[in-house]
Image: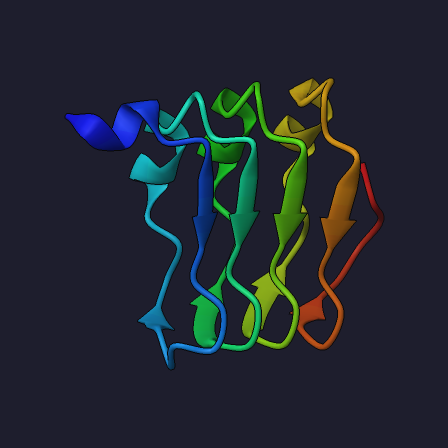
Length: 93
């Protein structure tokens, strides 16, 4: 579908709840993903590693928990990873 061609997805301040779906990894052309200031829970899916064009990933002010997945290290173009005000733990891969 057309979503696979999208390069920017900004969903800030929308009261989105639930989890980041693993299908987010299918958005391989995405360069910017902002989920800031929502009510998103649980962990960041490991499929994030499939988003090889991702440059900016902002997920501030949610209820994310767990570790940042090691798959994020395959994002060679990533320049900004912002995750303040969550419940993430562990080390940054």
